[in-house]
Length: 139
Image (tube, rainbow, N blue to C red):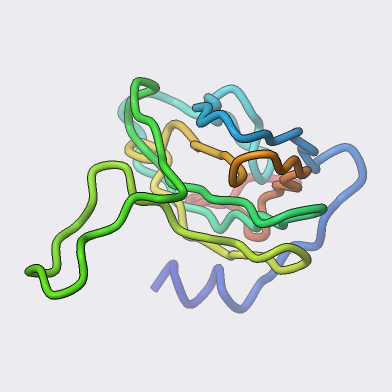
């Protein structure tokens, strides 16, 4: 129910509500619980969800979400061809330069956003809440 409601009520990038994070070739974890995403701050024990839009500006950006800030991601992590397919411990998703990813975040689980570029590249990851959280907060 909430997913449909959120998807049908897209929130635009509002001035002062877009994080423009520099990204280099080092895997870094950013605490997104400190951000008032969609007008609401993270509260321990409260299950709320929202959509985040992450845009890659300047180069491809690799990303993953995690519950702890000790994780790292690798742009070269993969399973060898012909091997049994498996989830890689450090394998991230990819946002091509100039593209965006819309991800539904469970704020009690997805507390850290891991970002990096391929070796020698730098970019800006532009991140904003593209829905109101559930339960909805005033924007």
